[in-house]
Amino acid sequence: MPVRKIPKNHLSVTGSFASRKNGKMGGFESILEKEYLLLLDFDDEVERFEEQPVNIPILGIARGYTPDVLVHFRADSETGHTRPPLLTEIKHSSDLKRNAEKYAPKFAAADQYVAERGWEFRTTTEKEIRTPRLTNLKFLREYRNVEPANKDYAQVIQLVDRDGGTTLQSLLRGIAANDDEKLYWLPVIWNLILTRRLITNLDVAFDDDILVHLAS
Image 1 (cartoon, rainbow, N blue to C red):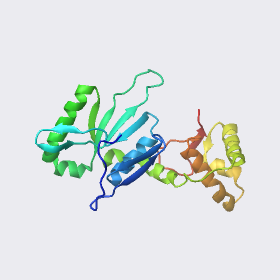
Image 2: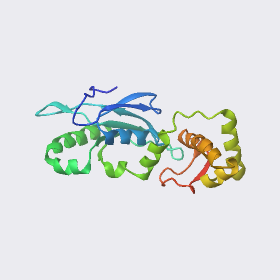
Image 3: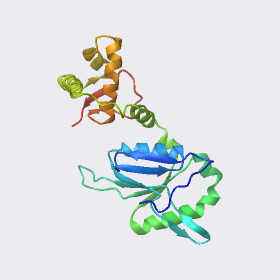
Image 4: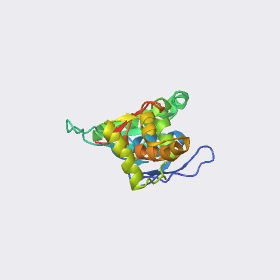
């Protein structure tokens, strides 16, 4: 549960994020933070995450320091090892550079806080967030309200299963006779990828040659 309520801010974008992983609404204080939450929501290594998770007391700073997100990870399916929780602050790299002196005591306190708990702390910037994966996920979320009929789902799955995995282009050739039919089937396919019933590499920019296969 957040330790503080995210206030409305006329200088930055704040709002709520619907997390399928957490099964509830969460808050964000910037577009960059919202984008990071989207990445977490579709990261198979992440079990859950908390916004505004803890407040760290700091001498001389009345309100202390509240990092943005605490990430909890799943145990590795092969080794059984679970990565320590990650406490992170989400900032633009230019902001970190410009305000390094101001942030230094906060980050030092966070380093000590996580060391005492066996966690990790780091800053996360647009360099780690604004990736091809983020672009793909933003695109896929436009299809989150599509509800494929069972017969449509079965038809797509049958074609993919028959071929043991195929390209998007080949799948469309096998299921759509013309451009109008492609316009019908594409939202179905994108929704199946979004809901992980079809799997593709989210780290590669989408095009007609992306490979799709069935979820294991």
